[in-house]
Length: 291
Image 1 (cartoon, one colour):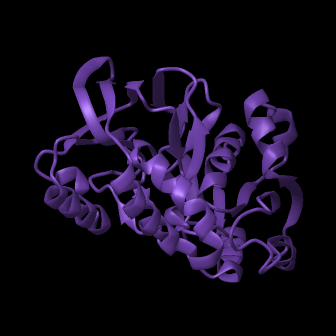
Image 2 (spheres, helix red, strand yellow):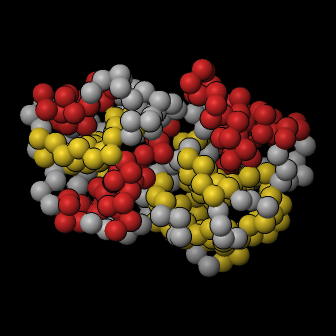
């Protein structure tokens, strides 16, 4: 088997085990590519570089998965995941091994796959498999970033607690498949595929591989008590079902924003230059190796 190994050396657990060595030990030949080069291949749609590839294996955190998934769909091959990040939300959602060596073996030898919807954000060259979010989440990610090395995945709930105190609502107009579904101020708006989020949480109500994205909006005006219950529901994977929380589904979700200069896409902070953010399901789902 010829594996394209996409590495992100900056990920939280990178360097603990050499994925390339494990893959070679399992009889694979590998082409090694850095995440930055992989992103360029996706942007330029360089399918010729993927000739002869049987599988894409990504060794990195959640922020690396969108690029690797886009390569896998471009090559029409499965994607194996070696979770080497801080939170590894996707691996948790897919019930993949959190031990890097076991994950490498599964990525190299597994033959059971599961379809996961891959989403693309127009204009940002960004793909995601978990959640893209505006509102509290970018503030939380900003506060969590310097804490990751010290407290790992706990940095996310700590960052969220700080953000809840310091952030302000944003104005959102949301359309799903062209239909207006929301207009007003919100603490948070999330577009979800798996829905795994923030190192410890899940939006809930997603259905993997159904060619739909979920929109979850937490409106402004909810008191401290309600927001605390929202946070608890997010941890239980029940936020989308909460009274007063807006939930919608569709293939194309457009958010028109005011006072939302940044968004978090699978844990990565991105600047939003335009007032409109459009996320849509890609033509093909990514086939994830799960067993």
